[in-house]
Image (cartoon, rainbow, N blue to C red; front, side, top):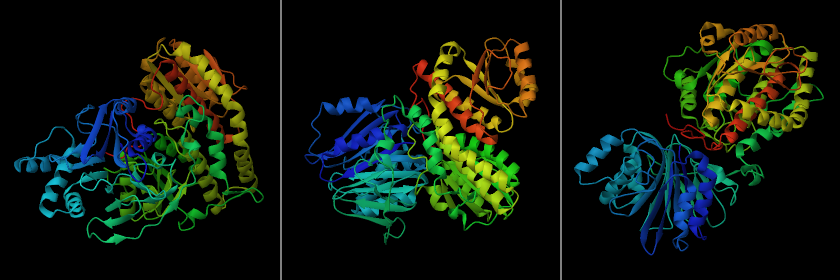
Length: 607
């Protein structure tokens, strides 16, 4: 996943583009670059590494004349991260510059054909092939519009791109297929970008560009074309409710800790207007077009997949609906059997996850209804689903997802209660208790998070020396153990594995030794006696243990981390941030790049 931004208007363009790239750096940080036209010449400035290096390079130059330009922050797919492979890429004539997010799958075939026509290449990227193809087609038709359309019809794969023409420096062409692209509309200036935060300081008015569409912007005008026919398309302008502060750190050291600490508000926002407290009912009008599901197929990746596994326990227990959960990258490559009475639920924070989106389309081919559960307004999953439930988490910038999972879990609780209510299988008293406890949850979490943060910090100095961890849990806590291990791996680079505690004896116990600690989720519930047995087996082999538990619990561990006991499955909402804070504090103590861990991208928009 890469980040692109293009601007045309009345301001000096490069400071605006750099500001946009700062808000997109979570999407890619192997290299970066800008392109603009100055004194009639196409200028391209690129660097390897973080955006700060590009800013240092640009600071030495006079770049304030140009009022339009492109910017790119790269997450490497084709070619190693270096300046040669950094975007923007130019054609041989120096007329066109291109930035691109995605993968052109047939680039090698096109590259061979272009080389036979005399084109030469300086990089290993598919993007350079695409800009050369546009240049080649332009030589024949002398129309940027036609050359771009012909080129895009010839390529296979995914792209969001923006093109700058030296001969028309105030005009920018952009297009998308299977990668996000959004048009931002201030007054007498226009943007295109991969994500809304790139231009949020300037406007909240946006147009979502669909697959197979081309957008043309100038300072005072814009229009959208169909790539195949070239016909103008009517597009709706949407207003975004996010503010600039919600996309900034707000005084915190990292976005990740800010987003962990925002979880009480995330719960409030997700349940707002969806709970009828007076009558103890859940109101989800966004689901009115869907039939009551006889079974559910959840499709998701990464953290969203863990939220899906967690939801399976709730949905089967409280709504009595059979649930299957699949990793989207596996689901899309098998032949799933989906009765038409199935409701497929695609879970994705960004709404752009490539594998989840592919799984959604397979589910639709199987004639099932699809519910999209996502955070980003107007995202691909939101638009392509039969119904969408927004999780209302606000922008999540840190690559490691935190508050997004909290918001997904909250939405999945609401779905469970809603369907249980529709099926008349939840007693009034149980539903009332569930709702009352859910309403009270943000206050409890707000009070507890600062203490959790302090405890996590005290644990890091002792446990940072270990290079591997187990995370164990049973029932609802099994997917949380998976998530705890994932967070530790993602941001501290410490190897960690999450397991269902009962599976430990089926092989993993062979790893237990004094240098291999276990983080066990052991709340005071019906599963505690079973977990105690697991703990004794670990202790007998000399393994150190951190026990995340409640005050009433009697367990023998090296570190007993107590959290307040919350009713029933809602206890998970205190377990989750404890796991996140443990990983966060460990990464900070070890000096890791918390918000932008190596090799990772925020949203996996390429396969």
